[in-house]
Length: 386
Ligand SMILES: *Cc1c(COP(=O)(O)O)cnc(C)c1O
Ligand SMILES: [Zn+2]
Image 1 (cartoon, rainbow, N blue to C red):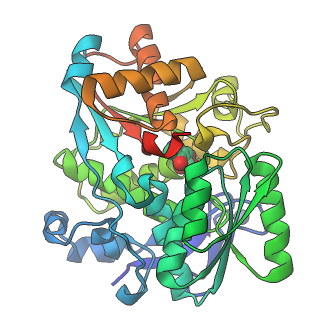
Image 2: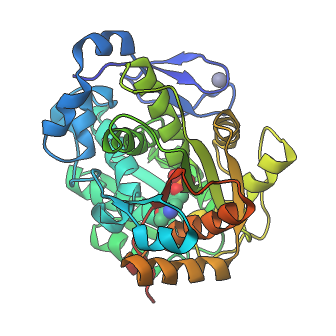
C-alpha cells in the first residue's frame, strides 16, 4: 500500500530502516527524510484518481509512510479549503491571491497533519508512549491523536503557551508539564525524560514522519491548481516542517510525472521580528541558523529560537529562489484584522504574519500583481483568545 523504501539522512545520505523505530542521524545530528519507490509508483498511480477517495490527507496513502491501513490514526485532517481572496487582492492591486486555510483541521491547526502521520507510524511500530516539547498547537494535536490511538502522551510546554493548547492537551488525557522557559528548554527536558523513561520523542524533525504529513499540503495545492504550482508560497516558519515537506512533495510529484510543467514556487519564510533566526541566516548567506536569544512574539508557533532542520530550510529557500521576511507583532495584528474584515478569515497570528509579509513583498516589487500567490493560514485565531 505504501511505496516507502527507506529513510535517509538529510546531511550524509546514510540509509535507515523504516521498519524499526528511528529518530535522526546519530552521526550528523540531522533529520531523516523518507524516500519512496517513485519509479514503481509512477507506473501504477493515476494522479486524477485520488480525488475520488474519501476526503483526508490519507487519500495519498501510497506516498505516505504507513504500510498498513489499520494503522492510520485519523480525525479527518487535510483537504482544507484553498480560498481565493479577491477583495483583499484588489486592495493590493493583485489578481491571483489565495489562502490555504489550515484552520479547518482537527485541533484547529495544521499540526494535525504532522501528528496524524507521526502517531500512525508510531502505532505501526508498536510505540506505546510519546513525548513532545511544544510552543502550543503541536502538543494539542499530539494529545488528540495519541488519545485516538490509545497511546500515552506527555507534553512539555512553556507556561505562557496559549490557554487553549493547555486545555485541549489535558482534556485528551495527556500529562502536561508547564515550564519556565522557551520551547528549546522544553525540548531539553523532554529529551532527558525520553531517554530516562523510554518515551518516544516526536519533536519537530527528531522523528522522520511529521514532515510526511505536512507534505500533503503540497499535493493538495498541485491538485487544486490543476497540477501546476503557484508562483509564490508564503509560509510562517517555526520548525519548518511544512516548508521542507512541501518542497519534498514538489520533487516527488515531478518524479511521478504529475506536474504539467517544471516551474516550482518561490518559497518565502516568514518569522516575527522578535524571533527571526531563519531570516537572519538567509540574508547573511549562512548554512545554519544561530540560536536566537530572547525570543518573543505573540505568534507562539514562531517562537522557535533554532530549528533542528535549519540547514534544510535554508537550502530549500535558496533552491526555490525564494526569500525570508521578518514582520513585527503590530503588523501581524493589523494583518489579522484585515483578513477578518476583508474576507471573514480569523487567522492565527502565525497565519496573519504571511499577509504582513506579503505587504512588504508587494511594496518592494519582489512579487508582481499577475503572480499567483498562496498565503498559509496555519491555524485558527480562536485558539489564541484569552
Ligand atoms: C507550529 C506552527 C507554525 C510553524 O510551523 P512549522 O512547520 O513548525 O514551521 C505556524 N503556525 C502555527 C499556527 C503553528 O502551530
Ligand atoms: Zn547523517
